[in-house]
Amino acid sequence: MGDTMKIAQLFAIGVLAAAACLPAAANGTSGKAAAKPRPAPSETLRIRAGGTGPHSQHVSLGINKAIIIELPEDARDVLVSNPDVVDAVVRTPRQVYVVGMKAGPSNAFFFTASGKQLLNLEILVQRDTAELKRLIERNVKGSDITVETINDSVVLNGSVKSASDAAAAREIAMRYVTDPDKPLKRDSVVNRVGIRGGDQVMVRVRVAEMQRTLAKQLGVDFNAAFNIGKNIPVGIASSNPFSLLGQALSASQGFGVGNILSSGNSVEGTLRAFERSGLVRTLAEPNLTAVSGEAAKFLAGGEFPVPVARDRDGNVQIEFKPFGVGLGFTPVVLSEGRISLKISTEVSEITGENAFVSQGGLSVDSNGNLISIAGVTIPGIRVRRAETTVELPSGGSMIMAGLLQQQIKQNIDGIPGLKNLPILGSLFQSRDFQSGETELVVIVTPYLVEATSPQNLASPTDGFVPASDAETVLLSRLNAVYGEKGKKPQGALKGPIGFTVR
Image (cartoon, rainbow, N blue to C red; front, top):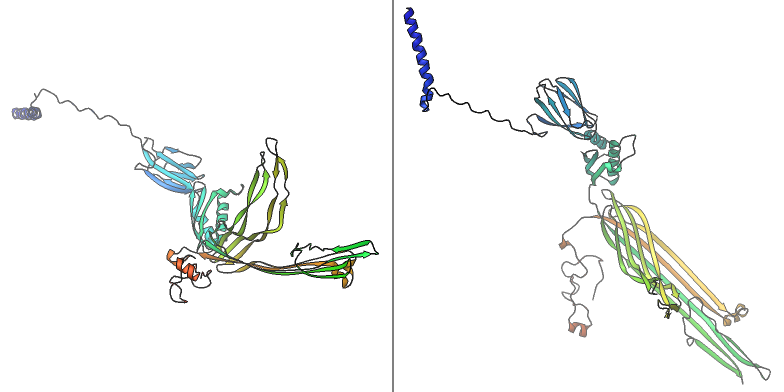
């Protein structure tokens, strides 16, 4: 029995030895040769940016607000990249408080005792826009404003009913983001709030003026020649000037009466009478369009040169002065259909009144030579100007300026003493009379306008066709006449839109 057990053990050992030698034989190697172990792979360098790993999370945190972080394992090390922006307080190994200190980005890493990363937290600290949005909605009724933050600044987007509502929203935002102990920062709020409705304003200004002038001149020139005694001739002559309007009549104009009393004695008289009436009608209708809050200017007229100085070489320096119909305005859309206008309008023209006339003379040029300088006449300008700020609805009109002016001038020139005689004094005097009446009205009408198709617009040149040579010579026409009598061409404007050329 014992021998049998020994034989079985030896057999088992042989089988195991044979099985161990089979792989070596299969590979064509000797059973005595041992297999070489493979070398271990080398360690590689890894760089992982914050926010890209499997343990990364992003969170937005308000200023002076905190969040509680509960970790799955005990943390030993906490790394905060910007402690001025974020502060981390470790309450327990598995509970950490993160507090936002001021606006800005930061991140925090949490590690175990063995160096295992538990969490990578990407933090953006910014102002709590929800509270600011609630403040604006509560104080600015009907507003549709969104609030965003960029670092320590606030961006307002959306729309409101009026410009005053936009200003109120901006003021609330400025006070919200500014420290109470510091002055308001105007640049801490980016206001991109628009006003609902149209924001392009067209202003139509109508300047209407009527002037009437009346001038009268009446004078008597008296000439007498006679002798006192036998050999003493005596002559009397009076030529009374017109000192107000100037010499309207020439010396030859008038009605003269002559009488020769006797030999060597004569009396002659000339009656000069003149009357002039004048009427001036001025109408200007400048129209101009501008965006709300932007200034616009318009001038239809010209410029005339005015000498202002001389250079070292004696050359006259010229400055050009504008005249004509001018319009300037700055519209602000306050609400839907409500417009505030800061407007100035001017109608000016060149006139001989109050003109400046410089006398000619001699001057010295750069070489020391005498040069003659001719006189220069600088004309005056008659100006009607108005400037004001009004508030009107779209399509409403207002008289911005109205002027009634009446001016009367009268001069009596004559021989002292004689011109004061009753009845006969008229023979020794002249009367110069001038009267002027002016009525001026400036009407302003603003409109909220939008762009339209070019097909809906017309110009004064539409439909104009120049006349042919035959029509010009035989019929004295400047433009061609076409279509039925009294029928306008298609596309013509309706109403009093301009002047008709015939």
